[in-house]
Length: 223
Image (cartoon, rainbow, N blue to C red; front, side, top):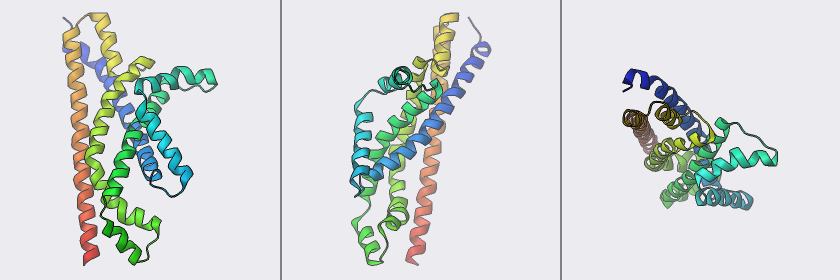
C-alpha cells in the first residue's frame, strides 16, 4: 500500500488548482451576481432583459454542458479558450446566475420605509441604492452566498473533464496508477472538507464583520 506521504503531495498540488479555480470563479460570480441582480430591478429595459436572459439560461442548463460548450464547442465558432479560463468562466457565470436571485431578493427585502426616507431626504436613486439599500441588503445576502461559495468549490470537480489537473483529476490519475482506491479517495474527501471549512468560516467572519459595520453606520445615522 502506498504511504500517505507519497500520496499527499500530488493531491495537494491538485488541491491548490482547485482552490485557485474556486477563488477566481467566486470573484467572477460575485460580480455577475450583483450586475444581474441589480439589472433585473432596473428601469432600463435592455439591462433588465439581458439580466433575465442570463439568469434563466445559466440556471436552466447544466453546468457540465456549459463547460463543455465553452471548451469544446466554442472553438468551432472561432473562439478558443484555455482549459483554465473556460473552467473559471463556466463556474463563475453559473454561480453568478444563482447569486443574482440572492441579490435581487435581498434588495427587495429592505424595508419600504428606507426608500421612503431616502425620497424625503431628496436622495437620488443611485445614491439610495449604493449608500442606503445595498449596505443593508449585503448582510442578508451573506448566508445564501456562503452556501453558493461552498457549492462552487464542489462543482470545481467538473473541470477534471476538460483536462485540468485539479484535485479530482489528480485523485483519479493516482487511483488508476496505484489502484489504492480507499486511501486516495479518503484523502480527497478530507481535502475537500478542509477547504469547505475554510470557506465557511471565512464567509461567517465576513458576515459578522459586515453586520457590525452596518450596525455602527446605523447608530451614527441615528445620533
